[in-house]
Image (cartoon, rainbow, N blue to C red):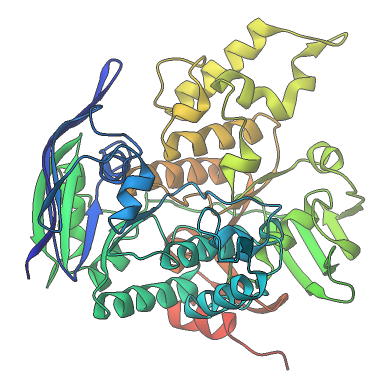
Length: 506
């Protein structure tokens, strides 16, 4: 195959930091090319150089595309040549419809007016292509983050794309939907569309990629033929050493029941009569890590949010029993007061204030512990943040570092610190390692194990079944809002969980 894209000698610096150093990348026509590396390796920066987010003149080096030298001054320039990038951070307008988002900046006109019939019809065809069964006129803000990712992909496919770049395309998707997306990428490859994917899911990389380029510390380490390539070999290139164990060792010390949810039912706040969580019951014990598995739309996040102070849903019924006594949790404040914490699946939108520093984010949920007569003790606030900065090994110069500048793994540590500071005995962690590299995942797993060792009851919601299998003492499966199965660590397998997750209502 001939070379479609060549990037040679790419060097990109920011004040005080060399993000890319003499990077080389060669992508052949009609292949799926994966770029792997830990957070901070330079993967996303390299793609932003290619797509014109960082325009020509702000970096050193040469880019050739389709046989011609390119000097892109903007994203619009690269799109005109057929290069389309889908960033890890979704770029959608929540109040606009799905169709409006897909064709934003590329509107379908008729005699100077937007042709809404054509717009909605073509958007519907694109949604069908990516496997998203939604009305094109529905507002994007009504969709979960996983479905919003599919809208982004449909938006990219609406353009005359020759090279499609996807930055963590399946980070928000469960196994079933990820498999659908990978099949979609294979279909695009067969149609002649070249794809570059950045992914921390190495199983997906080995399953779909034709070629793998590994970056480390802003440098090209090696480019490998994916045929016969193992995850362990990729990890060695990424971290510069063998990573013997994906999950830290743990000896569970499980005690009495801490939390029990009984006959929990939640109705949709927007669709009358629709039941999102249907008569679900589950329990957590002291020192136990419990998993919650399910396909997209199963109701996992909705279940967690509704338990956490009725943050989602309406007409909620059922009982929450804590330490043997029924409790009334009608607000987030009630949940925190009763020792329940919830770390959201979307840390950037709901879990953190990205323009604030680490200190302010850590203290946000527990300011009452630092206040006296309405004034926050800033010395105590600083000392608290400094303690978590040290204990959770947050990689940042100081607690005054802006949270939005941190890597995904370190942002997740700040989210955990915020909720640990409230001193909960129940932690609900929704997709705690989404968009985090393999090294940072190990650190998050270590923190979760430490929390369980302290006697906390931890509920982990994850779309990655190997993560649940490696981390949890018990796993519940949810399908169409119902608990369809439960398995111990010894019983659980991916096959068994998938049976539960796809179980039809009896």
